[in-house]
Every structure is written in C-alpha cells, then in structure tokens.
Image (spheres, rainbow, N blue to C red):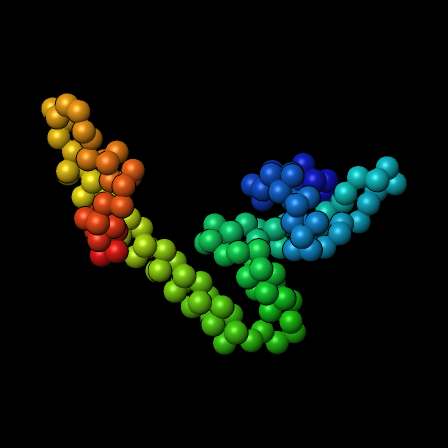
Length: 139
C-alpha cells in the first residue's frame, strides 16, 4: 500500500510517518519503480504500535526501546515493565506537579475580588516575589 493508504488505515498523518522513518522508528519502505513508498501489513502494525505508545505519552527514545524489545526473538517482559514503571512514575510526578499548580492558581483566583479597583492580586503576585503565592505553589 502507498503512504496515503497507510496513513488512513493507521490514523497517522503522512508527515508523521515520514518523520518516524527519519527517526528510525519505521524501517525504510520498499519503493515502486516510480519511487513511491510501498508499505506492507507489518509497517501498519508497527505504526499502530508507535501511535498507541505516543497516545500513552511514551517518548520517542522509550518507543525506540520498546520496539527493540518487541523485535527480539525472546521478549524480555521484565525490561518492558521497568520502562513502563519508569514512565508511570514520571506521569505521577507530573500529576502531582499539576496539582500544586492548580492549588497555586486557585489561591490566586480566590484572592481576586472582581469589584476591587486599582490593585489586582493576580498581577501583583506575578509581578513580585509574593511569598504567599510561592508557598501555595510548593504545597
């Protein structure tokens, strides 16, 4: 199949497919006599694997390692699990960081009185080293 059909079948943009080829995640495809890329079913399966991995937030480095492990004759599930646990820990850290950010923004929003003229506590907090804001962002 040609790249357009592969893109439609896998829900991956044509430019993204080319990018994955340049990054070495997708093998270089065979070419027709006219120089067009020709893909087989295994390319579609690999591309779906990559797309699903990206949807789960894996980096290209991690996906490259997952593909390497998947391509081995004997899959080392322990290594796959370790990589996935590390990614899960990163996600949990980001969630905690977002929770702190949410709390800090809620604190700023609560400090704002819409009817107040003149000083704005949100702008003040962004403009100065407001200790109350910094403290709420750390919690």
